[in-house]
Image 1 (cartoon, rainbow, N blue to C red):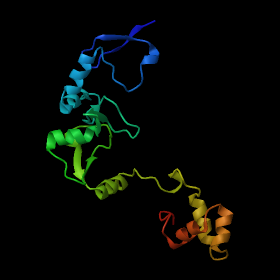
Image 2: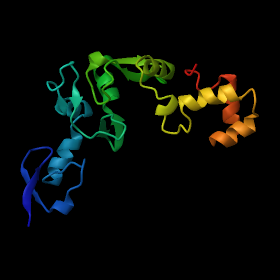
Image 3: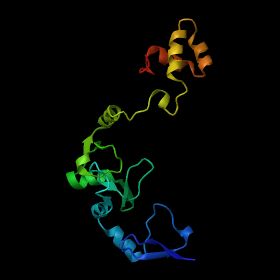
Image 4: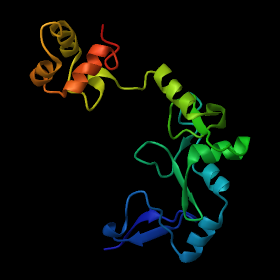
Length: 190
């Protein structure tokens, strides 16, 4: 049985559909006219209509529309997807120069507050990431096979065993052992 289980994304009239006809993160429209009116609305107007200005105590403007798996907001215009923080920056500050990224001061990926956004290069983004402690290293890295204790043991045993023997004992490749001993990896372990 059809029940009014959603509302039109443009005019808020109830839409009667079967549950299997609804998909997550997909907007529903009551008619083709409403759909065309919605997509003819400028992207900046749609951006401003889908912002929650009051729910965040630290002044973030949170995007209420579709959010990607990476946590960034997404908005569509002329059949192309755009990141909402980049659209917000362009609307409030002007065109983003080629090769520049839009970075967040607040580290909330779906925040579109122009006061929280600033321009930077990819290196600025990586430096900001390291400074705020958002990088994973050591045992916290998802691909790590060794622990900090293993690293200390490898360094102690390196005087009496070859790199290939150490690699076989700890279940890693011998080049990994070489990088550890030369100080190229696991540099945070003393």
